[in-house]
Length: 340
Image (cartoon, rainbow, N blue to C red; front, side):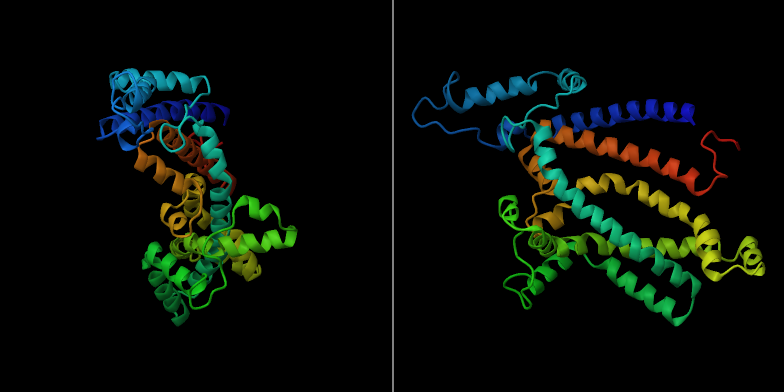
């Protein structure tokens, strides 16, 4: 196990380095840069464009700081050297001069909370529904569930978000939820129960938008996984021994069908913090999704690279976590490639 983990960590380091290198090259090759996507200030007077003063001087200082006048491989070397010392740089255009780690940490809790609730709701509802559908395969209930899930999966998230907002937010048909979520300063003024109620009203609809698509897909994966095992010989043997149906399904069948769900769960880790640009934009949520959109639109190289690094680490970590969960779910699986 230790040897396997060491090999995977070494491979992950080289993979992450390649991801960051490719990301940096693509950013530099794309048209524009932070000095051209935003005005860093505006000086009045005839000397505003003087090479030693005004906007030009500030833009040139930023280009020197980001090493944009250097070859791509030199600029990446400077950036990566700073990262090795724990410095991801400061924002170039989203919030000029502020460390990008602070920007990410400010937005991270909201996105993590939204997506954790969405994942919990998805798994807690989708797995039982998928198992129920598998046990009643080809019956009217299975077909009705399949139809409903396919319709649900086909709905575009932007359409669902706008529909929910127009129906249930302030100004809609049934104005129960606020159109804009309250700020941290407003929430701190509330007592505990009022605080929790305000959070529920602010984030119930965004969580629903984040969960419904994954719920529909995961239910079908759970159903298909169960269908592969419920007709196996060991399931018939377990029933012949007189075990209860609950034990047969959840202890014997589901444990062997869970491998597919573990694979999907490993890919959810980066999603938990990446956020949804569409959902956060519709409901005006200041999370990681909206931050990624700001970084992209303003060509904030340091912030974009920090987000790429963050996403790469979480993706590789999710893959490693899925491998470890395989062993926990099925002892017959060996990470070393041979039976232990």
